[in-house]
Image 1 (tube, rainbow, N blue to C red):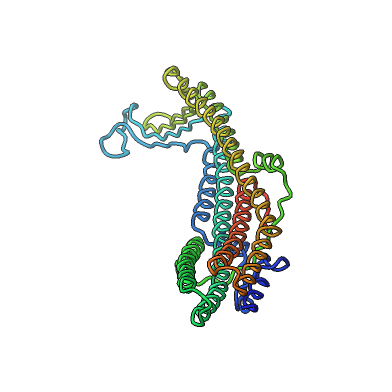
Image 2 (image 1 turned 30 degrees about the vertical axis):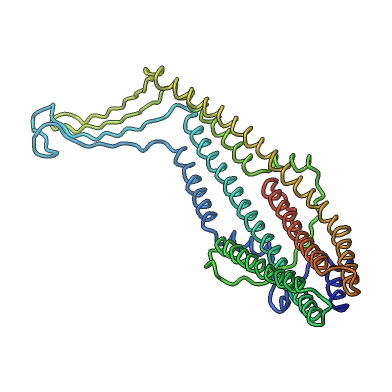
Length: 422
């Protein structure tokens, strides 16, 4: 019994209780890192490819918007019913060719081009935001999977120890030094460990399936051993993270581009009050008279400006106001998200220190004392089991808290566009 307690205490003692532990045989396979998974998802995920194609499509609109309307040409005749034949001796009979070109009022094409260009820029920031969301989703699943695997490893190791305690209780009961209820309680706790392992393994399968889905692999595709996770220091204050979120967050940048886009839309709507022009050239071939050339200039007069151009300006102005309000709404949500994840990280940081320096060592000492008292018959087996389970739960909670801390940093990375994880 003494050796069993020493193994447990060595596994949870102050110097080596909390550092990340490797799975058995993990060193034989290449470790899967977070950054490698994120790079793979960025390389293969179809939503990113779709967003890139959307950017190219919108950039292709810029030159179209800046280009004059296509000219129109026409050919025809007047006179003989037969196609393109004229009546000889009839001066009113002729063949003709006509070409016309519409010319927008100066500045309209430039504004249309700027409008299309801003739309493409807004889409570029949307792509960046999508990329960061995917990276954060990969990180969240990665850390959750790592925490689950640590819980599985710890539970498997301690199940072996608990089975040894159960055998000790059985031996004491057989020689008349123990109680039957101790044996039954030990068997119940072993069954609870099996239940816990079943749930944890199912959680692991779910998280592996999530990562494989992001990688465009079958859900049950094998995933190599994860690299150990160490606590990453957060050196930035809340104010610094908030400032960076406002300045660099892709959603804010996208909305800024949309505001500028709507500003160009207002300018263009106001420019529509001004008329467009048309230039026309005509050539006539007549049978008994000299050929004729003609040129004409036309102007499109916005006579229905009250129901058309003025309402277009009102529409553009309302869209601009909506875009500005949407920017403020996004900024408010960002402030909340940054503060939420920052406070989560700081709280987890404090809990990690508490587990490492206080709770785990103290509960380990309590278990050691309980084991010593049980060996000399001064403590019942139920108290030993209770202390044993308490130490196990605290160690698992430590790794869960570490996973939560790293996930909070991953979400801050997404919001602030900063590299906070190694």
